[in-house]
Image: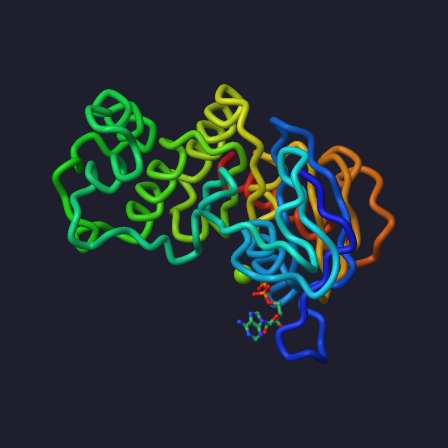
Length: 245
Ligand code: ADP
Ligand code: MG
């Protein structure tokens, strides 16, 4: 996928996203990181076709799907989107939520997905009976089950407790890699990015400060904001090590 000079303003004055360009190779995982209000969700919503860009274009599978003339509907983009508030169908059980959008008789797939999210025992439960973290995992499973060409996740891990999260990060990476799905996910936790992603995009006030490999980001960033964040991160990592030793 490629975006070119993508901009979006909600009020016609302030840019929520300003002149953003990047390409992501098929099969790569990219994390989008930045402070609250930096334009992360706007970027994902533009790629998904949930917003119309002010300027610029979105290209998926070598087809322009958003520009000043075209806006291909989200459901025609072969993408999967997991929202921050994970919109499950409240009147359907967990297994029926996961099966939604799959062909009939997809029970093996549903079972595989339930295993993946470690929720085999919850097949018959309703979303209202789940914790926030469990609901998030079901939303993830539902989206992964349809094998989208591009997976977009808006803060998928924000409701997960730390213990579950570290296991799930690796599982998600492996699954996404096995399916050769391209994935872009938003997180405010740099550990998520370092653990899961191949590449990272760092946004500040709607502007892309950096797009690079994770290694380049962690080792050679020149931006003061990013350097400060990474310095904090290593202090935290050291503190965590002290706590467990
Ligand atoms: P993030 O996901 O990084 O927190 P957003 O993309 O949600 O950032 O928001 C970027 C900017 O656009 C913020 O200033 C936010 O207030 C504004 N914004 C986001 N969505 C809307 C909207 N629907 N209407 C008006 N302003 C919006
Ligand atoms: Mg957001």
